[in-house]
Amino acid sequence: MSERYCILCVDDDVICLEARAALLEQEGYSVTAVSCPLRTLEFDVTKFHLAVLDFAMPALNGFQLLLRLRAAQASFPIVLLSGMSRELPGDMRIMFSSCLDKGEPIHILLNTIRSFLTLSPDPLERSRA
Image 1 (spheres, rainbow, N blue to C red):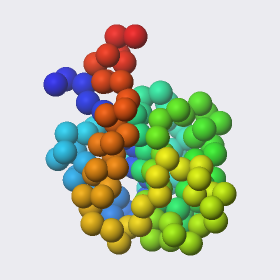
Image 2 (cartoon, rainbow, N blue to C red; image 1 turned 180 degrees about the horizontal axis):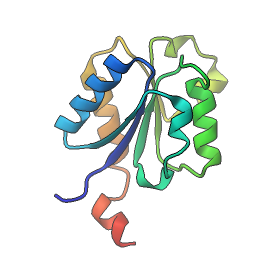
Image 3 (spheres, helix red, strand yellow; image 1 turned 120 degrees about the vertical axis):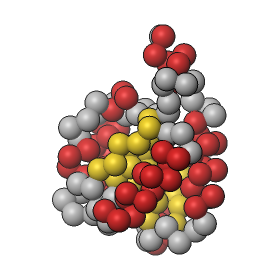
Image 4 (tube, rainbow, N blue to C red; image 1 turned 60 degrees about the vertical axis):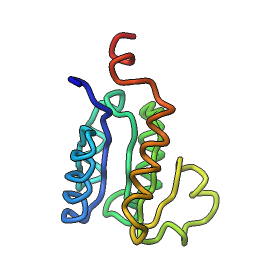
């Protein structure tokens, strides 16, 4: 397959970010890994099918980044993956497509991503539109 689903991963913990990106690439996804949330805003949001964001980051937290991405017309699912996801107020949690804890087994993240992407158009179909 020449085109793959593109996932945006944003986390200021570079070791976790690189490990997550490598795992997602092994699963067949194209991954853009960004350790600075402000740098994320430089990307064309139309190229992504899904984003996985950390919450506690410098400059912009995950919720602030979600708001900026939505303001930039990002229409893809945005998953929060954070060590503090359960501590966020409900009015923040509800804005994310899903909220997962970094301590959960990795298959939960993979299943969550798969479930959202099976609802999205196939990348090949999207590129023809």
